[in-house]
Image (cartoon, rainbow, N blue to C red; front, side, top):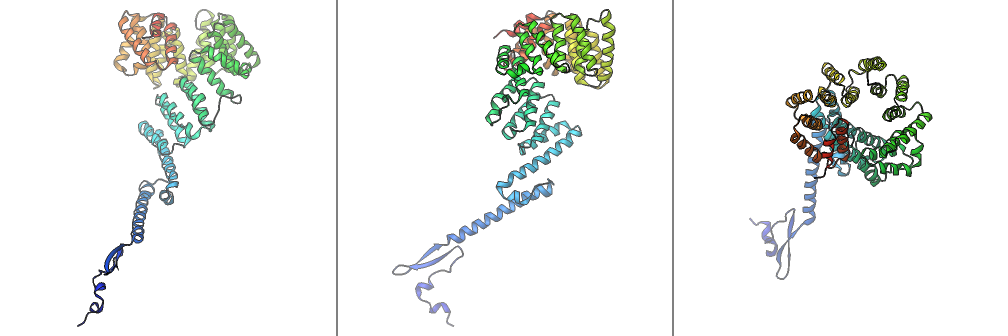
Length: 467
């Protein structure tokens, strides 16, 4: 039987059949077969394969987020279209944020922190998540992390008033003054936001306080002179009075506060500073009268109560009954408030009120507050009162139970060691403090002030030495 191929010319019978990805052609003389690749089909097939694989992968990713992990707000189109993928990140960040809030509410603090960090990492522009994380870090006793998280949000939310106010408030509350100045002077302006102009007196006051707290009274005075509005702002009077005081103008500081008090007698900050400076300058009768008026105007204000207890702190003669009455009301009102009690604890330590400091420590245990800082106040009050042997015993007990936590108050350990004749131990602590505060001048200045307040000027001089 004759096959169809037998009738074809020899040149055609020699050409193999075409493939989908190429075919043979004959050319030349004599004719010869030549293979021609069908690049269009190959590229189309490759693109189809890549597209199919990509869609399959993205669909699987969408299923993982939307079905397996049940993250709300994750749409298939947002997963597939890369320019829209930021919406997926935002949805994941919001999901983590909600989980973090639930974990924190359930007191699972470690997981809450890690989850909140993941929320901010996924959606860095989510200001609510960022503020929540910063608050968690503050509650966990890590103010430096809180400030770092907040400053990281400037790149995304520089114009948001909530971020601006929270950064300033957090830096002031946690005494991160160098961070505050850098944010106000460099980081916000880098994104076109100028907070230190005449329209933002609150930020100008924050800058003024930061300079003052860092020991730059001359810089603070120059700032106040350059901003005439600050001189007339009653809220600035306490800060400007402190500038006067640091520059040796003590009477001028009191006079400034007296004028501010006349202009705005209801301003609690001015009232508080007026009482303080009257007491500082030896105007005891005026301090007593002003403290009474301040407390009468603000009977439940912690600052008014603590200032009254300071001014009437001799607890002798007629002062005793007045002091005890206010103290009992203070304890009844604030026995559950660690922050309020800490203010009184600080005063008790600086005044050497060992009975008050010990009572606060016992109260912290009974009310299940954090008893450790109140034990520190008690040890400090013993040092101030000159009972160094008792302070040594208390400090030794604390070092056994809370050795890691004592680092936050090692300056008291230096005073205890120095007062009990262990000068070499004290100098070792001073060397460590000098290293720790090399880049934090405010903290070093605060510790030096504490040494002077507690009667250890020699240790303050050692800390101030450059090595």
